[in-house]
Amino acid sequence: MKKLKKYFTITLLISGILFVSSCSDEIKEKEIDFPNDVTFNAGEGLAIDVPWLTYLVPDAAYKVTAYKYGEVTMNVKKNANGTHTGFALSSKNYRSYPWITSKPRATTPSAAQIQAAVDSSIYSVYSGTYPNQLKNFTVVRVEGDDAFFTIDQPRIVEHVLVANTNYNFQLLNYGSRYSSKLNALTQVYDEYTSGTTYATVRNPNIPDAAPAKFGVWYMSDVYNFGGGQDYIRLAGQQILSKIAAGRAAGIAARAAGKTKAEATADSTAAYTAKVQGYVKLIAKGYLNSTQTGTSEYYLALFPGVAPAPLDLWNTIQGAWAKWDLSGLGTVNKVIFYMDSSDKDANGKMRTPPYFCLDGIRLK
Image 1: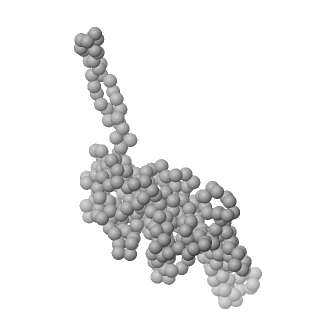
Image 2: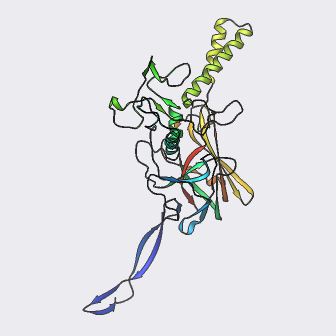
Image 3: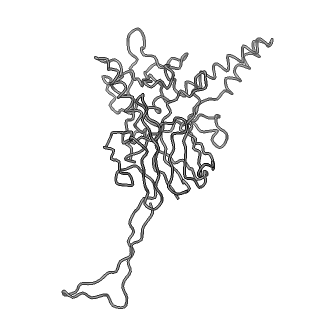
């Protein structure tokens, strides 16, 4: 926050007569707060109202101001399939799996109810075990070059605040289905413990531990981001890739005439060396039509995947954090992209292309 210094003269009213203090006017200083961050709260530079715990996709690009530090235009458009591209607005803060899609249930939810539950999760910021403290924020869906904002006058973007959506956070940590039984072979949580007995478990971040509220939890891929297949948690993806690398190395060793012991050693070494697992954001800055720089930020990262000094990171981000964009230099446009290690056979990212953004600081 910046402080605006307001100066005023103190006068004295004595016995009904106005006197100016002797000698000279006494100058006092009062500090009044004005934001130098672009936020997305109605009345604080944004003309759009987002009621508490709701979300909306504006019909067109919208403007947000930060006192004298600049006006930013956020790009957004609605898609025919019910998704959006660019920057939607939200105040939602769901931090677990949807209740309505859990099993066992007395009634089966409709397709519309499932989609509403998924949308509620997509448009919620994951802020850990505590409620979101930032009021309104944007939910960014990356597609092509359409997730961008422009600035009325060229400036440096000191940083933005970013977080995972609840949808992505649960998928990265547990996958499409979460139960009390993890299948070591598939790295997918099984629906049943045995027979028709559900492998129930407490919904993440729900403090009520009563077994009657346990369930098998689901996060459906209603928009087909994952190609119709279950999402495997990020750690499970790494384990499966290690197993595949070890198996391939062992087969190659035996085909080359190595002994069983040598093949086993090669297989173990390949298993250990294989590292996988990341979700990252990419920002590209532009001054008019000239690219000024690129910045990367990891929303999820396992050790050994990225070069130093990030090589020891082991995290799936679970709260708001700063992303320094000052390295982009002076810009009047920033475009966001997204990448992950979870790709299909054609190289298409299966991770849902969403993240949350707030607090654009200009200087």
